[in-house]
Image 1 (cartoon, helix red, strand yellow):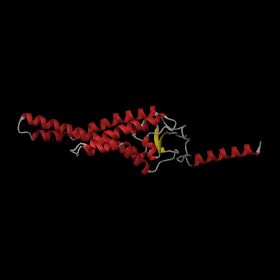
Image 2: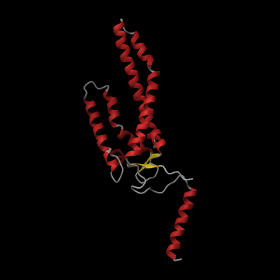
Image 3: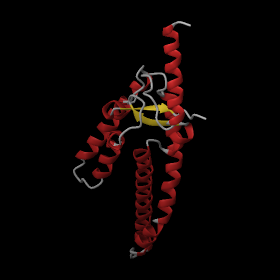
Image 4: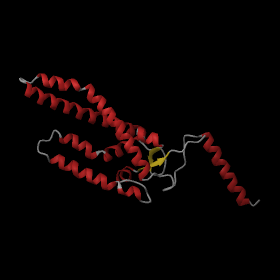
Length: 203
């Protein structure tokens, strides 16, 4: 066997030994082979939306007494019905916002939402390594900028922040289009230096 072939076989054996010794560390993934495109991301998002919706309903149900208390403030049946409806709407909205926020923080802290965990994908740095928490937090803030500004806009009586929120929502949707490209990165991934990869489990 030639010296070059022996050298290559030796390097492969070293790589296998390194992988067994350090199963939780991974060499950088190639730029496109393991990155995930639209399909799995969309599937994970639908699962997340369903689970977050249930969480929001549960939190809203816990806050239902707000609606009952608001109804009790009415001086007559009509006022009680109006105030009760507003209280129920408020409790449901708060429940959805709190539930969605806490739910999305799971992804910001772990690199994978429950939907991504079920599908088997995970957010990593652009080279395939485990990302820094600052990158995950930055990605979360960029991705959810429209929703964050939208919540703050509820306190803005001028309505200017609502326009900003709508604009950011459009930017987010357009920013998702590059996922179909060769790099398979959305705009928020590019800005945060991350990408979504399939999770390969070694036995």
